[in-house]
Length: 552
Image (tube, rainbow, N blue to C red):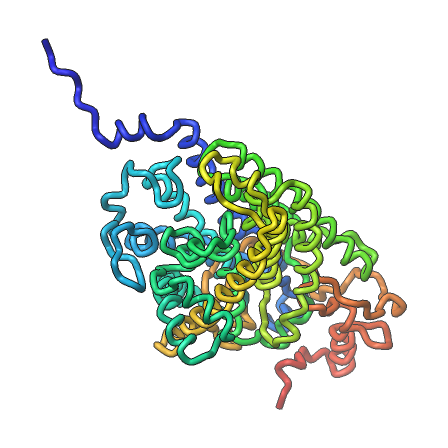
């Protein structure tokens, strides 16, 4: 009689402990989250500035060929794609172990027990008993990839790619450790308000390894304290939004000439990127229930509602200024709603998601003006979209979170909600969490970026390289090649009506509130500067001397 076949212990655990439907759902959800990365690339490249004909004319000294594609397009796609690869390597190398190692005894960061995904197999995951640790590590890696891809938008139009990749690796790695060590220094120096410092000391912050651990690890202070953060309002949204603002602050402003004629490069690409993000975001939020259950369906429903109402709110706010139905505004509002749904979609009922959508669409729209107030050139509005949107979702958890919604996964049956459950203290817990994550993220990101810059890697391109564009200098490839046009770009353009040149309030979709250079370049004579130069050249014997080269 032959012996029965020996089954690997991991397979036995897989068959007995985990539902195959849950496994399949989270695998697909993780793949959807990966699809968000190219969505971000399309969104960023579509929002990036288009070069005006006059700027190109100056650059190429009136050569007959005028390059009509945006110089920033390919470089931003490259930056997002590169940061994704760097984060995957970091997460496999030691990122997962430093963040989620279950045997860590160091008070600042995890150990290397799971270095290279060693011993990450079929045990129940740290985040949920519904899925194995191997699947959990993959799903959390995709979250890290999306966070890094959002953050890297802070280099838009003036950051060098290689130093940005080094920054990405250091930010994902060192940021986890420094957030814990900075706690002791800041609280001892009384930099934070005494109340917040008391809350952080009370909640055992010394056992952190990352912002993700604050909310999701069993030893995290926010987790132990009872902060409600479903899919990453703190680690993903506040981390990338505030971090992107800090990175833009270290890089400094773009040249003033580079801000002329700021209009999105390609609105169709903006729309395509938005829908790719929306598609992936359903896996992002729905998969955070860690199983094919009713809570996952509720999270998906709430994501749809918040994004729809936020998009409509943003468009209406823009319409009141320009009397145009802005596609960029619709896409921006949709993303703001998805951001707000990230921390809230698994906690609140559907009717509350309508409120979340309206609040996020309105507040994120107004927050696009913050960069002018603080003087930081946040080119892609990372702070307005992600930081403010994430804060709105976290705040609303304190008001609308319901224990009935939380218990829909069949696991978290004893978790209290917010004010709907008469849990009045939940609101100030959420506020303290928002403040703590925001302050630490800004400080850590700025320190890392400045350290890399001082180390000789030079994060920013030179003014001359900025004038040429990152695609030309950093990548050497373009989205489209040269297109032959008439010698003067304005040939064949209808005469300008001066009555149209009335300055109107800038809508949020304009990103910088600067009207088209085509209109601004026309004087009282109804001619563009280029047309005047042509006339002067003809009067001077057709000597082709461009004013930009005639400084002496």
